[in-house]
Image (cartoon, rainbow, N blue to C red; front, top):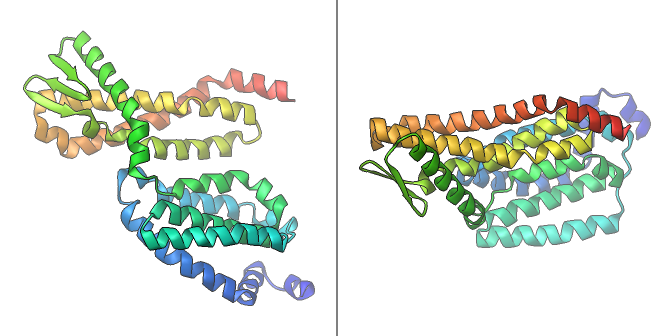
Amino acid sequence: MDVATNTLSPPAAHGRALLAHWPLVLGVLVLLVPTFIQVAQESWTGETGVHGPIVLATGIWLFARRWGELQAIRQPGHPLWIALLMVPALAAYVFGRAFGFLAIEVLALGGVLLAVFYGTFGAEAVRRMWFPILYLLFVVPIPGWVIDSVTGPLKSYVSVSATWLLGQIGYPIVREGVTLYVAQYQLLVEDACAGLNSLISLTAISLFYIYILHNASWRYALFLMLWIVPVALLANLVRVMILVLITYHFGNAAAQGFLHSTAGLVMFASALIGIFAVDSLMTPVRRLLTRNAA
């Protein structure tokens, strides 16, 4: 079998391997296709899941770029561990699918795929590919109650900060909870600050950037990760202030229309630029940590 495979081109060898294991491939597709159709319809069309296709594509790329390495260290996993991974994952998948818990369904599907990956390439491959495996967890849709519980304190912080800053430069703005009153307009930070939902997208893309550029220095990568939330909060504060100013000068219709979406794009771009700027400014720290590691 090994000799025959070596005489084939890589695509032909991969195709032959897939044909040899067609029941497994078919079973994975039966689970994969309907789940991702549902994810695309229910999660990827909203702001909280817009990063899903990007994470999925870049996650697959992370595996593809190290395909030769995976083939070189390939050693099929132990059947007992495969079963211990596969059986609970399949049970959770059936439960999530039957009762409409999409997050459980997708997470369980990830467990099935992890069992297949471990069974095909072994424990060493799982260890080496720890980041792509964890990174793909960002594809899992986060339940709304989790997002609300996380963003609640952030909304309060943003509303207080925006009110204080705009009041300092003379705008007639007051706050009641997370509701802002500017002139005759009322603005709910819960809606205006929906960009906080993109904190998940920003975290995913920032982690990808950090991994690609600084994987060799895990200390600096961890240090840079600590800046993600502060940068995202600052960017969201800027977004809320922009929306308040648009509402004050141009009316509520302008703020909730095209300019609202534009402010969201500005926020996300600003946050990414902020991460890049922090990385650039922290070059001396990176050199110091790299030197100490050596």
